[in-house]
Image 1 (tube, helix red, strand yellow):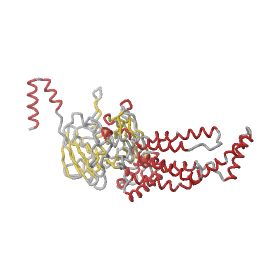
Image 2 (cartoon, helix red, strand yellow; image 1 turned 135 degrees about the vertical axis):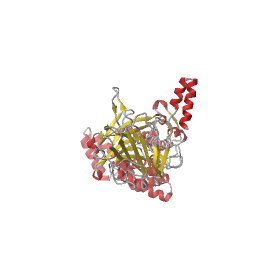
Image 3 (tube, one colour; image 1 turned 90 degrees about the vertical axis):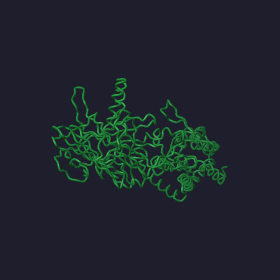
Length: 574
């Protein structure tokens, strides 16, 4: 009936205006059906357009709430679960899906490269042969080949098992199959997360490791698996954003053509099969830009080596596609090898022991106070309490140096221009009175690993994603309360961030309270003046860092102001 109505519409339009008829035909597109596979961990939307994946949703995840001025840049606007980790990040149908089987390529001289025997004209919907809650089998036939693709969603984890079978209905052919398993990955806020997005590859099994690949510039490509021989050692390849990852893994086992009611994942081969013994492949990483949200993305394309297919023979390939958030509970569902996707950032991998310790401690405190923001505040108090004796020694040493200032000046005058002799006499004087000139450096040196651990924790810990505190909408993002996009900066936001401003104000006030020691030389005076403005530089560095990190240092600056006044009063330095 649909075909009859379309035919009548075209005839009527043609009678009125031939140009209108052409437009009518061009606008008419196949109506593709969507099949939903669901389990307790994932929900996958499969289209009858070549069996592609339109959406891969994680049931337990939800979109974070961003400030209103950032909503146009949000990777997902829905606040309710599930969250689509794989979605349409490009406008065209073949670009905006995952698991796309490429068309045959027609060269200028008329020769055709047979990918999997699908032409651009093969746009008819595939037939749903089998369908149930976690499994679907789709079939298709053109004059040369018969196709079957099965998708089965794993019941225990968010992994989609897929097998493609192509049976040759005509003369012998050579297939050069190409698949696009991944095409972009969810980012909560792409403008600030492009730095974290990377391609990766794991090779060598348990004894091997994961290697990260920087994204190529938009519209350029870079090899991910360079040679067919290299693919034999490849366990999986994929994309990693800040808090999510998706990875594709080859799972080779030659199978018979799929028939309704049969599973190519379970049944043995029953017809001549040529695939399975030539499962080597190459993979490329191609960058692209999602302009509306100013997101940098990438797609992965897999090219298997050519496979000769005799008349009546079947080509078969299997693979899996997994997606996950980086929370501890989600990663526990996967193998130790797969859990390494968490560490595609080399700095995070290097500091992971410190970061994990901080995350664990914050989790323990948050379990008591029921809020991660308050846990950061309490952690700051605990650290300051643990370093109190060190700070006391620092100011005690400063007091003694102030008292020794006149004597130090006399030493410099008596030594004349002999700097070496003056330095030796100075060290003897320090030793006599128990002064340690390096005491002031110790608190700073202790703070450096704490800074690195907190930075890595709030930059990479998915367990902290979406956690709010006071006016802060998300401790893993800057605490923007107002903002406006700046067009010439490519969509970056000119924003008002209270925490860094408070940090700068408190630190500058504290710095101007510090007076150079009486009798200090000109160099020491100039150094003290320069050090007063150092917090302003740090505040600018902190401005667009995760607010959980800036919260720690802001609270620390406030506590330090009170602490230093107390110590000075006790030591008689006030």
